[in-house]
Length: 293
Image (cartoon, rainbow, N blue to C red; front, top):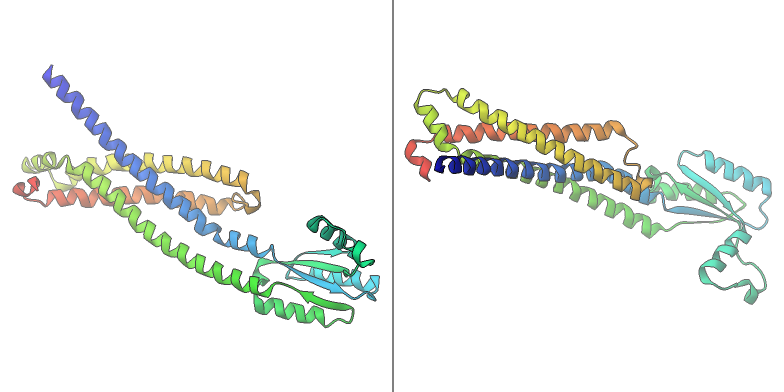
């Protein structure tokens, strides 16, 4: 009876050890995968914010309809344009009325606004220098009164995006190192509990490769399970992010996502195998009296 109790205790202890290894691998790989998604989608996020900035072209009152139509068409076909929308002075007045809640034309007696074209630029062209060149080129036309855009906002946005990109890359490197260390520690602890078995097998003549093999296979299986759990949770996270922010198009590049998932999977197996090899090798190289420390 005592022997059965001891066997059950050892079995529970073994299952607990395996569970902790799987859990640590799954958590760490999930965090790495989420960080990888953030790194891959940094440009998408940056482009999304850049493309919210518009350049407004105000037209003179004497601008001919044909000239305005030609300008809008040329802007729509330009390589830097994402969208070019004509806004009449009446539409602009309606927008102002909706925003401020009052009809300012009742006080003025006339509409002081101008017809305009709102141009949304592609993200690659949202920089202070490029927008200045675009504005100068458009502003040189006789029927254009003014080209307006928020230059300080563009400069601030580009600086912050650059800073955030560097911080994300640094965080990725740090988290990758932490992931390797955490998974390695979990596997070493699981092998540490079997150090006496390792030494006993070694003393009866088993070779190092023979002793290492079952540990590597076992932890490869645990790494496989942990990686699959991490990928399932990562897939659920992606689904909800796509539902909440469809404009980001997280599923727009399936090849990129497949590469990320494959990378997380291979990383889990690779770290598990390498950590097991070196952890087992460490205890194989210890003297018998060193096993107690």
